[in-house]
Image (cartoon, rainbow, N blue to C red; front, side, top):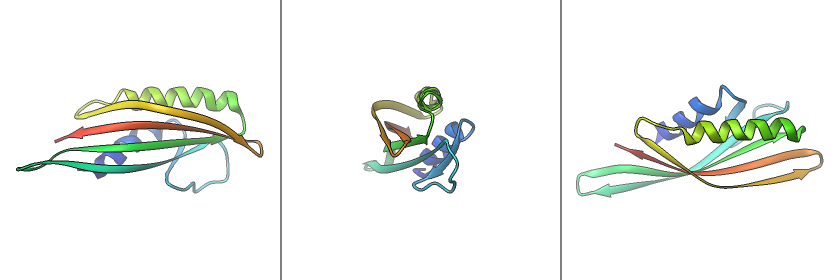
Length: 112
């Protein structure tokens, strides 16, 4: 079940931008990568939900283009349904050597 949180993230973000787990497999901009830490929650009957702290990092050279993509990614991940809930927990924007990075953080819950 926990794998499906990552699958859901990919399903929602991949149509918007080149999207990879942990490390980019491209050198062209823009692209995004994601990481997540998943915690299971148990009852006496077993796992009843998973909580994932997910980070999406968006990279590009044109800030205006990234700003538009950032909004689309945020909207997509906040509209999760069918057993998922998502909370936006923060962001940061940095520029290093002409490459912008926008980091977005989410907490995503998946119920059995």
